[in-house]
Length: 91
Image (cartoon, rainbow, N blue to C red; front, side):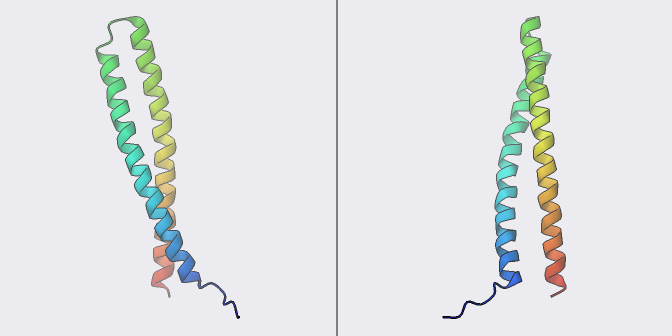
């Protein structure tokens, strides 16, 4: 039995599929974080006590941190997919 070397295009195709799946998962997370941010902003606007206001601000800050990380990863995946598309056009 002879094992052939994996075709680079096969690994790129798999990689592209995996990246797209990860990207779609991140889009779902983005949607959920957007709703959490909207909730925190609404609670800031309508807080009935200073404790509620402080908690809402902390929640907003936490969500914004998560959004930043998520969007950074999304941009990285977009860049990887562009690189794959460029290399496919050259083959």
